[in-house]
Length: 311
Image (tube, rainbow, N blue to C red; front, top):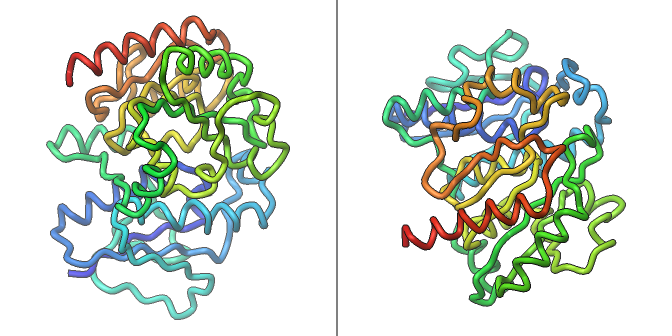
């Protein structure tokens, strides 16, 4: 049975929120016992609902669509069939689809809430279905050279700067774990890698090429001994994989996509891990405004001790 998964840019965002949408949709296809899944992105208009929707230029949206959104299904299946339709006058739907009954121009619900993943988990299914392909893993192996690696993933974007990583604090964290023998790798924000390159103010090992390709970014996460994430939608790749990590800076009062109201509306319980997280995955609830190097180092050291005890 062919199962079509649609993503309509007139109704859904050009952000990493699409990551958990595709996971939810794919699990629904598997529940239906689909033998052939196709991912179809409808792109004849852009959504104009949020501040971010209206902040991005059409050129920026087109870049994110092709560089991020259209490549996310490949993290589920390296041979995923992905197409982008800019004209829908000859639209044809073959078989069942998600959202159910979708048709261009007709309002539909595109579930981008983290609570949808909790529903999948409670049904005994696994929503963490992102996985690297072997070629990407071999590239990362050549970069890491078999060393015990901590990946530090930072946010320094061109929108909503309140969510950005404090680079000075991140550098102190980097220096500490380098000094105790880890190979620490920094993956910058793609916006920064393509823009001002603020990360170049510091002397640390940075792989900007990993910011440019989500397959390589995920492979780096999976090959890392431990991941330290500080904000950024790219952290969705961690949340939807089995990689070990601690997520800092995702909670911040006063930031509408990171405050208590936002997270509780997404089904998270304050002070607790999301129910769909696996072992060695942690959501840190300290407000991002108060993060210090000492706090981050202490939490990571405890996580590493726990990781070692679990083998």
